[in-house]
Image (cartoon, rainbow, N blue to C red; front, side, top):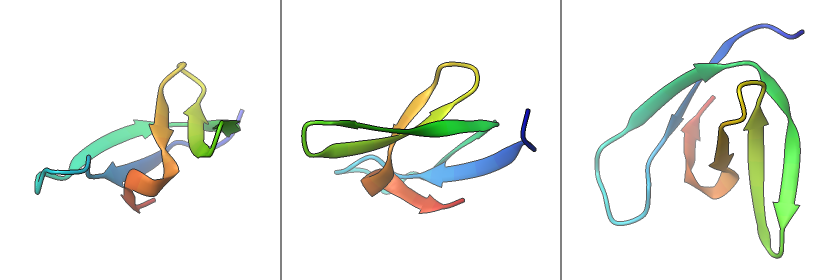
Length: 52
């Protein structure tokens, strides 16, 4: 397994930054939207990421 990392993201229409820690398992595309997939099953839209 890979090393844990912290991803910081912001959902559109909000100013709050959220953080999630996990191991990146891969990337996935659904239609025109790309997601980063974490080993625990969490998926985050790449266009919402602020830092990683």
